[in-house]
Length: 72
Image 1 (cartoon, one colour):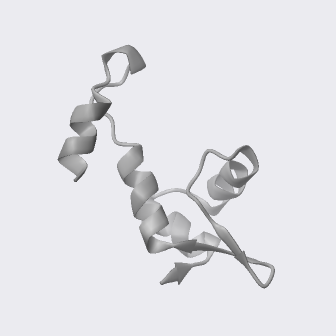
Image 2 (cartoon, one colour):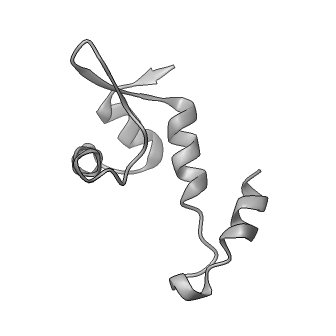
């Protein structure tokens, strides 16, 4: 299943504008161009969400290994 920018943004709780900006910086979910249209695959959105799980506000206190274990 593929999502438009608007639908992908709604799926991950962000705005379409935020997704457009992260495409430029390379910090958002993986996307593809299909016939000139940007599309997001559901597994890519889910992978991005899982990769951004956190256990603490501050990076030095984050236990990303624990967050990854909980996500799987």
